[in-house]
Amino acid sequence: MIRGSDKKLVFIPNTSVDRARSIISTPEGMQLGEAADPAADMVVLLGGLAIPKMNTDVNDIKRVIDDITNPDNRTIIGVFFMGIFQEMGWTDVIDFDYLLDSHMKNTTLKK
Image 1: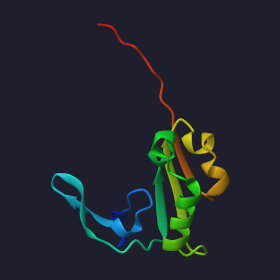
Image 2 (image 1 turned 90 degrees about the horizontal axis):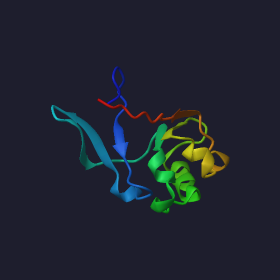
Image 3 (image 1 turned 180 degrees about the horizontal axis):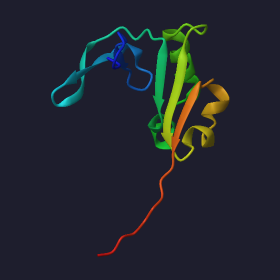
Image 4 (image 1 turned 180 degrees about the vertical axis):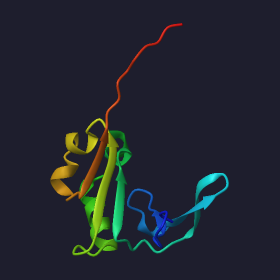
């Protein structure tokens, strides 16, 4: 659940809506639970989906979003590193409401 709300979390691996599972909070952290209804009013896409070696078609992801949400009442959030959604053209296909793009700076520390 999202703190302070009655929203439930569901994980869908890639585009496999039939494999949707609840996400539950346990003393050991967040874990996958039972099969769950994938219907949503908010979708969070993780940048790993857009990495070329994943071979995920952005149009398939868009179809899943359209199937599990109401286009008039949904929020789509992208969470990713180093501009991968823009670099792979996902922002041209998916109408994100929010993008959380993190960048890393490499530093070498010597003792």
